[in-house]
Length: 602
Image (cartoon, rainbow, N blue to C red; front, top):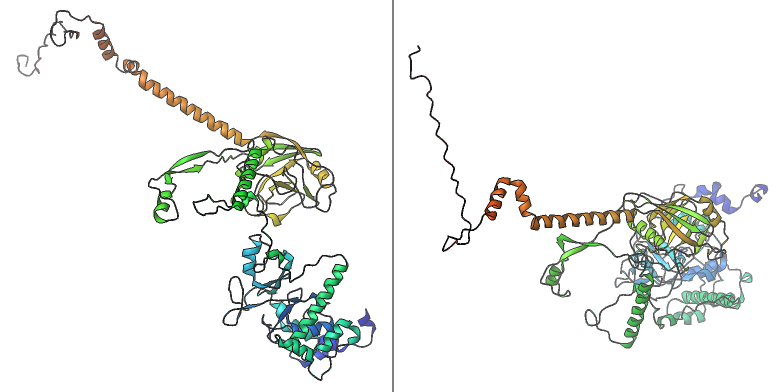
């Protein structure tokens, strides 16, 4: 290397690696830069900017440092003036920095972030709860769109080394940073103007001058105003260069997006109110929107009508709907003076596995479904397959060494419904199956509890998808078919260039149908037994008594057969006379003595 070939070392190498390091304490105390201080001057900033990695600096120190050294003051990597991002911090009434949304005061233990496109500073909790989890990728103050990559971390309390002063590049190299800002009569901070553009040279000439003082009179110090002008000039030059290359660049001062009407929301995601019940809105626009919503909903239900399965319910005698209590305790709820029993959904939970075959134009795939672990997901999949929902549906996404996705009739990746309507919940609890092998069958979704009809088959183990997608089956036959599908080339959108689709489905074993037939048979037998018991109770009284008491039955029969005496008069004329037993009474047996009254034989 060059370092080994030369016969000397530089001053920096001597100070960092060699004996020069002895002129400072070997075990330097741990010093951490506060979040409100500049990474160059170590002083509280007045107008903050940050680098793309989130390092915060004061603009009056950052601009001269970058112009002179062309380096990142902390990392030591290349850095240009156009890469700096101006930040917008917010203070509370006490003068402390805080999150403008949650009003949470920033401390050294707060995770602070900023949005690159707008420069607004928030706590990470606000971004996670209101943007990431809600899938609302818009700035919370300006409503301007941004991406996940635009979130910059300014302070992470779990990463202490990122703000340790001894690791900063300009500290290691011993760069003088106190004389960067020019004062009246001083030089330009040892900046080599021969390597600076004409625009930057004019900006440097204005540092500390009367022009800068006039700029500073409008707000801030003269050095800060001149640095602000330098940053704006660099940004403008970069924007002009990109536009000359045909790259569209949005004007940061353009707020036209705030004047545009909100985008049309999908009908399934809209909250509809009945006019007059909870809200009152009779405008024509709302009526038109409601009409379109109802038409879209009716069209969607008409398309899914032949695939929908009605839910089986039963009345729970131990629970009520609670409407009476809610109406009694809340003025918002309608009044109910009578309790109604709660109606619960009865699910089918088989203990056996299901088997089916997907016939594709590339070959067959034999599928085993884990009905005992994911009963709702398996019932939805096998019912759709049995009803022909997947017939002719393409696999719209294939990523080599990752997975194959299909099940969307629209072929866009945004369609598909379940057999119960729109979406159903994930099944992670009690499901021990994971994405640990090739050929695992799992549900595709767009977030938590958004399962429809789309599914995917893994090409390799994908443990990062565990507890995010429900595993409900696996491929047990046709791995060569899966390999042929994986080998099909794809375009930039991961769509196979050759059509890969499901032609038909064959179901071999459906435990849901078996349980349903068994329940119907049991109900039918119970009804027959009940009807037979009712018939015996109503029409078989005499027969039952005959076999239980034959003597009484014969006596009653003889009485019914006896002729009615015509000689009787008065009440009971037509009642048969009781048969009198005329047989002679039995003779009384003589009582025998005990044998102890006569003693003749003694």
